[in-house]
Amino acid sequence: MGEKKTNALSKSMKLIYVYAMATGAIFTFMCYWDGIFMSYTGPGTFLAFALMTLAVLPTAFVYAEFSTMLPSTGSCLVFNTVSINKHAGFWSAWLIMCAWIAVPAAGVLGIIEWLNHQFGLGLIGGKAVIVGSLVLCFWCVLSLYKNVVAGKVQSFMLMAGIAGILICSLLFLFSGHWSIANFADFFTSSNEKQWGGNFATGIAWVVGCSFMITPYFGFETVPAMVEEGDFPIKDQKKAILGSVITCGAIYTIFYFCLAGAMPWAELTNGGDCHPFITFEALQYCFGDKIAWFVLIMGIVGVVFPIGTSVLGFWYSGVRMIYAMGRQNFLPKQFSYTNKYNQPTLPNILILVVSIGFIAMQSITAFFDLMAFACALCYVITSISSLVLLKKHPEWERPYKCATGLKIASLIIMAIIAFFCTIGIGKATWLGFAGYMGVGLILWLYMILIKWKHEKVWMKTPDGDKEY
Image (cartoon, rainbow, N blue to C red; front, side, top):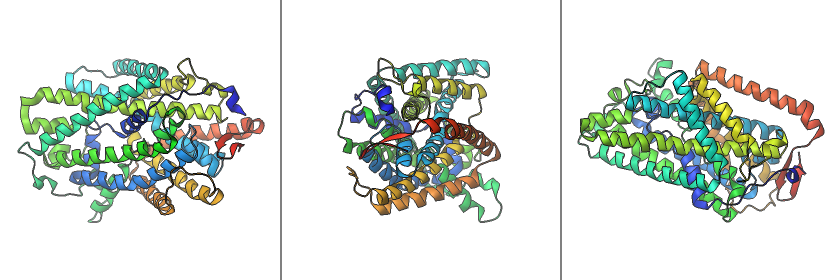
């Protein structure tokens, strides 16, 4: 079938690099989106992260089983096509790509905003587009080169970022300003403004907590790189589960220390979601004595986490598009690779789309959109895991996820998606409608034209099959 017409990816990724890519993708914009996190879930942000870690783990277990049973680049595209049909595969891939594609542009805007904040460079308008485009070109070139190089870069930035965040946490904790009194109004949330009455606070905090799924999507980058791993397939679960647990622990520790360093209303300006509140808290606790450390934290708390996250999602997006080209969801040219065995057209497509987002300079609504799109994708994948268990119980599963965890994943992700709909604003809904509209056009083109002549195919334990 189509596989003979495409180039293969090289098996050169060690387990530590895959773990680093996944953990780096999840290791979110720690000191850039800090204002959003603390505004949405108040002094209880650390609890929101702890709860979300537990909430995401069942879905991570589902992906761990799928990725070892169906080890083919494309993750949810593959899982849901084989389990349900090609339509479920297409739409789940389109949903997760909604989140993935937004990350590079959002990350570049974060770096530019930090440069303006730290150095007063005034990179706005056309200047921001030019600088952002150059940064995106660098990521594109890195992605087109040997993936082992990208893995090493990812590993270095990840470890430096984690070390900086943990040191900063200790500084807050022993600053002399940290106080349990700063946890008053524990469940305060900026989302309260959307409702009135005494019931508002609890609902608003739960809505804010639901949006905390955004810092967790990224463990699905492990299945995206499954064909490039040089380690036993069963070890994939270590990268998937390890990435979720590592980041969840760091989020919980850091935001516990940050919340206690300063009163919430002062720290977040009443919950206005402005960025870089970590740096403001450092200034509050230590004044100008550690201005040098604030600069370092800008690098390891903003630039490095954004760098690791963007690179992880860039890699995942490229491989999703590659799989769609190889398996006849897109023209086969998207599955061609260069001399380094890296997909060429998918890298260029993501670069062009990302530059387009930079030119728009309107990414804020995508934070909420990422959460909603990911939760919906995880709902579909959770359903698929139950369907495939019934359809093919005989298939070998190097890692087995308990049926109870699959059901828990479905229920939890459905609840998160529901509460996200409560908190999503008009601008985000319009953006989502536009994105899904493009997907609808592409989907109809495939149904009416392309799929009439060529079938979608997938690798399965029973061999290659058409769908």
